[in-house]
Each structure stands twice: as C-alpha cells, then as structure tokens.
Image (tube, rainbow, N blue to C red; front, side, top):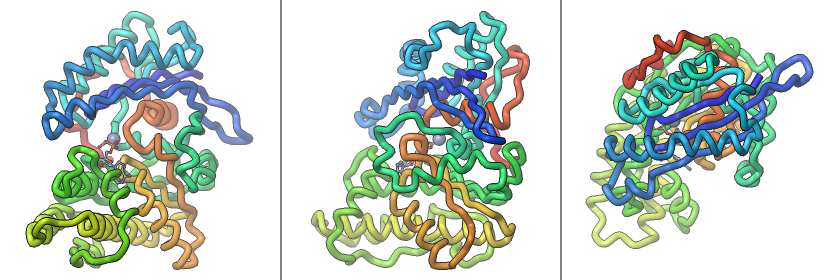
Length: 362
Ligand code: KG4
Ligand code: ZN
C-alpha cells in the first residue's frame, strides 16, 4: 500500500510517500520520499510567522512539493497511490486550507480514498516509520531505538508530544488506541524555547539555537529558574511562568557577554527538560508502561533525548525509550502518512474540512 501525505498546518509545506512492508509478524512503513518546503527565512524578516504570508507562500509551493515527493518516490503516476492523507488541524486556518483543498481536489479527480489526520497526534507516529534518509541519522545516537516501535510488544506506552504549540501526554495501548492524560495549561515547551531564543538575540531560530548556545557554555553561571508544576503530582505542564522568570532574570543582565548568553541557554534548557522528563516518567510509573515515546519538534533536542535515557538508566527501569531521528521530529509529511496508515480512517472527500482548533484530547 502506498500513501501520499500532505502537511501544511503551520509555515511548512510538506509531502511524502510511504509504503508498507512486511517485517516479521509486524508491518513496517518505509519512507519513499519526504519533502519539506519551509518559509522560515521569510518569516525571519517579520520577526515571526505571519499567517497570511505563510498561506500565500504555501499556495505557491504545494503543487511543486507534491510533484517532487512523487518524483523522488519514483511513483510518478497517481494511479499507483492507494490513499491520500492530509492534516486537517490543529493549525493556522489559511495554511490548513491549502493542504486540505489540494488533497480534496486530488481525491475527487482520482477517486482515491482520503484520510483526515490530526497533526499533533500524528507526531507520535514518526516513531513507527523506517527512516530513509541518512543525512541526519549520524546526529542521532538513538536511531537504533526507532524501528523497534513496529513491534506490538511496546504497548502500553506513554507518549509525549512536545512541539511549538503543544505539550501533551498520552497513554497508548495499541497502534490505534490513545488516551489523552494531560497537557500544558498555558504555553507549550517549544514556545518557551522560541521566546527565549528571541530574547537572547537568536531571532526565529528557536530551540535549536538554545541547544547550540548551551553546548558552547563553559561554566554554569545562570540564575536558577523555576521548574513549574514539577512536584504537583498532576500530568499537566505550565511554561508561561517560566517565560516570565526568564525575562526577569535576563533584564537584570547589563550588556550580557556570549558566556552569559550560553549559561542562560543551559539553565533554560535544563529547566524545560527537567519538567518534561519528570512528568513523563510520573505518567509511565502511574500506568506501568513498557515504553516511552517522544516526538514533536522539541524531541529533536539532544539534551532532552540524553536526559530521558540517563534518567531511565539511573532509575534502573526496564522501560524502553523511543524517539524518531531528528529530521522526523520537526514538521514533515512522513508521520502524517504513518498516522493515516496505523490509525486513520478514509472518509468521503465532501466531508473533509480544515479544523484549526481540532482537539487533541482523545
Ligand atoms: O513540531 P514542530 O516542528 O512544529 C509544531 O508543530 O509546532 O515543532 C517546532 C518547535 C519549535 O518550538 C522549535 O523551537 C522546537 O520545535 N525545536 C527545538 C529543537 N528543534 C526544534 N526545541 C529544542 N531543541 C531543538 N533542537
Ligand atoms: Zn508539529
């Protein structure tokens, strides 16, 4: 089965083709192509994503992106595609409409089934595809963890999706069965990374800039920042107070040197990752799970990946840890196809509509 997937929920325009392969008793998904067009550089000029600008740009590049994905997959003919998957929400309305209307048109013209996908839930299905690219894999010491996810014995699992707009915990009892356990009460972890990056002078480079600055830190001199809701026993998160604390501490600095910027980056990264790891492990213990799945753009963070592994190791826990390679953490269409394959249901194209506020509380 070949699935063509389309993703346009934020500023990226992405298309991918995946095919399922028998892998022992289980099924594995192979990525045949995964094309992402980003307008990040353009948004840099405006100091953030301007929805209208993003949607106009996506309108221009959606067809070339799909075309490129088909060419790269060597499936040149839509007749060899078995289903079309598309993100219907949550996200920016103008951006979503570009992908949704394109997918509907293709479904109408070809008669192929169309599968609506929830972008946030789909992130976790990046753990279930076999990565095709080798470009970023060397950066990921955890790569070998990923393909194991195709085994059914990973369940039950706790899944943390942590992105620019979401920080959500789920209990996953099979490929299809998800239960939302908790999430952020205000800002997402990615937003705390992004706001800090702007504050420290890194523009729109977000969490990656914080990670890189932290890696250059020579000594620890930053103030101690709060770890919100760390010990409240709930499975909720809150990052807006942390953002305010970061701002307050930063304003105390007069002419911060590179050394101070780097030290700040360390403390911000430590504060955010401490909370993410602790809450996820609390959920894992509460539900007595076999594995933890990490996903979303913030899952690309090397410190977060390391901290999960080292904490699980220190606890002498038998829980296995899974995270996609870096290029499958940030937005792309391969995991949209993966969600469609493992959890999606085809619907009549007439009934599909963009849903900017689509809930993740399944
Ligand atoms: O999943 P994603 O690509 O888009 C959304 O669905 O939001 O996530 C984007 C988020 C941004 O907040 C970005 O700063 C963050 O992921 N991010 C990182 C890293 N790479 C991307 N955060 C921390 N460390 C990274 N290396
Ligand atoms: Zn995302």
